[in-house]
Amino acid sequence: MQLTTLLVSAVLGAVSVSAAATTVFPAAAGATTLSAAQTVTGTFDGGMKRFGRGVSCTGQAEGGDKDAVFILQAGAVLKNVIIGKDQIEGIHCLGSCTIQNVWWEDVCEDALTIKQTSGTSTVTGGGARGAEDKVIQHNGGGKLIIKDFFVQDFGKLWRSCGNCKSGQTKREVEISGVVAKDGKLLAGANENYGDVVTIKSTKVSNVKKICARYQGNSSGAEPEELGSGPDSKVCLYTAADVTTI
Image 1 (tube, rainbow, N blue to C red):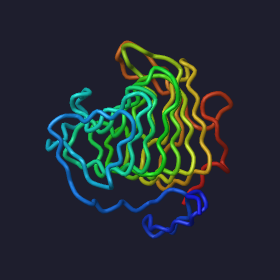
Image 2: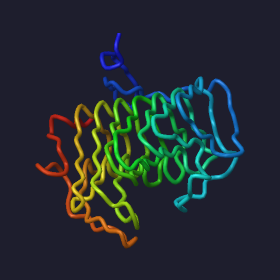
Image 3: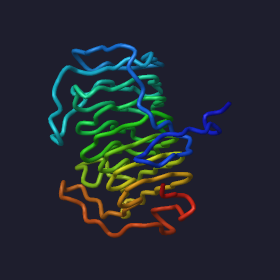
């Protein structure tokens, strides 16, 4: 039976949810503490072990590649991994990458940073919780597909970088089969750079905004929010695409 046809029931508060995303965080099959970021080329299957760096979260202080748990090279596949709370930067994709059934137990600065210059990266299954700000930070270009993902207690699920000092460009995201609970914003896009957000078959509970448009910049200043909600240019979805649960 395909994942998209499974009936997954979970309790979100007192609400029973039928969705493609699995909403129960898995138990770890073991634990590994890395002394340095692990670079992945090809495919790495973590066997549902928990991986961390043995450090305390530094909050929203910006880290670098050296602070990541995994660094994915172009074409890399990372699957069946749990990212523990003892880390700062989670996963960095330096080129188009594929992430399957990866879970972030407690997001620090970001869970995932997309640094590809072009192409398409994919996040399928898995989930993240406890993100003070962003879960997925899209700093590079190209497109990200987020499918059948669970996110809980978060600031933003996806944010196109609003004030990167270099590399500001059009970015796209496609969100489908997502279940989101207790968040501020599902997706944030830069209208002036031509960003496009497409949302389908998504379920939300206590999420304040679904899609917001910003005036991005390369000066490092806080970007201005221009508005939120569906339109025909940036935030592409209808009321039927986003169900409140």
